[in-house]
Length: 184
Length: 184
DNA sequence: CGCGGTTGTCAACGGCTGTTGACCCGGTCC
DNA sequence: GGACCGGGTCAACAGCCGTTGACAACCGCG
Image (tube, rainbow over all chains, first blue to last red; front, side, top):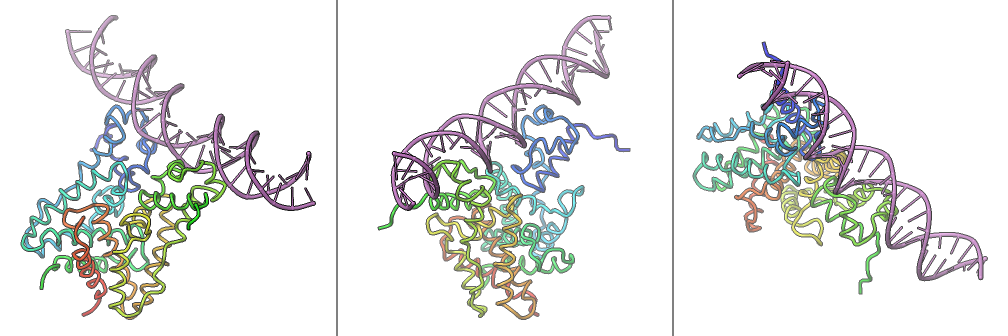
């Protein structure tokens, strides 16, 4: 069976859960170590610093490099990545919510920015190809992040806590429009 | 001519500029008082607390209550509110960017959430009327906030630092699609 | 046995946070 | 003159922050 996780893993799990839900600078190392049940000093030992621990949790985020090229597949994959939680352990937070929570941060915002540009926007534009590929990719991301924002952060009555099918239809509607930008 | 502003006004101006750009918990009262050139203790005297000062800056944000009812006017007004800075003193930050920066905050997020629901989403849905009014309003906000996010926070290469006309066309494209949600 | 290396525990550090109370200074009013 | 009062200055407070260094317990190895 699964042996008890190492201290390093306990720290990493607790850090991922807290950082991704509340944001880097809204979580203290003492919050993490208390949640993991280990001593404060062990963050320094295993990850060098709080920043090192955060970056270790970032390393697990997938990119869109392996996306299919067909436009319908892009749409379906985008909707799917929106619906699926990025961390199976936690609740229903997806990748977009996690990136949103940390992009505002004064210390980590730059790193998140690079991740989205190079891990999401650039691969997506390459897969799309054709006219306005970069703009379409950017608009698609705007739609996805905007919907994540309205549902999870602003929690608008019209969107939050609705059945999955309805959310999917809304995402697909907005995302499809984004992919048609520039057509005559 | 304009007399020198009162200490209260100096505090309010500096607080608005810093809070709206960096977010509530990323700004200290000492940052504000240093920028305003006054003593730290005066925040307590004039506004009771840091939170009181922040809420005083929130009171100036306009709602969409006075919006026109025609759909084209809604679209035009949305694009215009996106282009126009909310505070003429500072640079190009609009209302959406300011709300974005503070929605994540663990202490002030709730207040911002209520402002957006009651000051933007609800009035907008009422003006729109008809089928799916609330969903359309929410999708429109998702498009606007998503675009603000991509431009100002994630700063995607394809969107940031582009001419105003191009941005307007992209906003209008996505926003128009949002307003058509639910049509057969 | 003794040794070295890893792992965990504890207390403390300097720095920053929001907030407070004592104090002073320039007025105005009795 | 003397009392009062709004406005401003200063030092200090308690608390949290990230990080560190000293120390103890344990391990396998020679």
